[in-house]
Length: 328
Ligand code: NAX
Image (cartoon, rainbow, N blue to C red):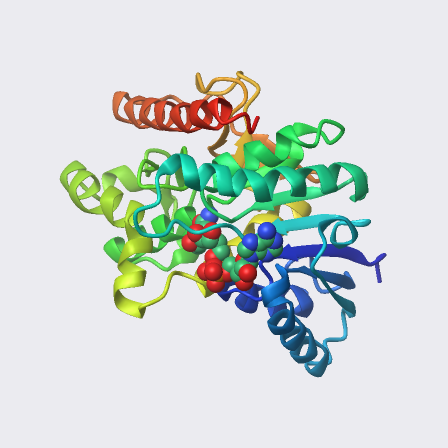
């Protein structure tokens, strides 16, 4: 049995939190031989609900769960944290301008980044789920100058998994047969899900589906799936988002199977696919020794290039707004 890992989950009393915590405690996040200490962070109004969830976690008697603690103050919540899942965010409410949304989230992710900087373990890995995820991740990263930038990531895995699911349904293949899916860019409607390199039971996906289906069905269906879930369920994606967060961290820590890759939103140093330095951007990656490794050198079609450029523009505009607000 390995040394226990401390996992901090923000927004622990929310919908994603409820779907996420039990899977972390069961061992799905880090593996079945790694004991977990859970730190749950909530805002004061939701602490009672988080304590209820903590009671249920204890009642589940998970053999790997060493402890559960609930916090309403950020510093202690990140003390010794090895994995920080930043789920809680300020949602966009009706009539809210983008600047207001960014400012409210800057007030959450800036201080959390600083607490991670000051209190987390040296090997801390951060996954930002709360929207706008890519930009919130950049804000947190800027407040944590002592933490390597590559430790701040944004969740693109739900988009990646949605893309796999759509391609599987179209081709009649099991999801396990689909490899090398890619989603470029941001977790927003701007994203570009790309089957250019994907294989289905070893065959190039591009030979199994036509360009018309990709353009008029696949891309918009994946990019707008969140809205379709809200329409059907009357609530936003929660269990699938939690599952994607589990997949992201599991692969980051334990690696990606040979012959495949996944999509994390990763820090850009300016050396990948023409994406400028400073963004946190979805692209194909594997993981080695707990570090993401971008899959470089893929040939990029004109359509993919356009998808990447569109996302660069969208991400930069959002960061310009964040910069104008003095948040980074
Ligand atoms: P909920 O509103 O159910 O839960 C959010 C929780 O966060 C609440 O309990 C709230 O009290 C808490 N919270 C707010 N501010 C906090 C702070 N400063 N510190 C600690 N906790 C705080 O939302 P839920 O459905 O769980 O979604 C959470 C976030 O995930 C949202 O921002 C949502 O937009 C985002 N999503 C991101 C996805 C992705 O793929 N990146 C997909 C799913 C989801 O839409």
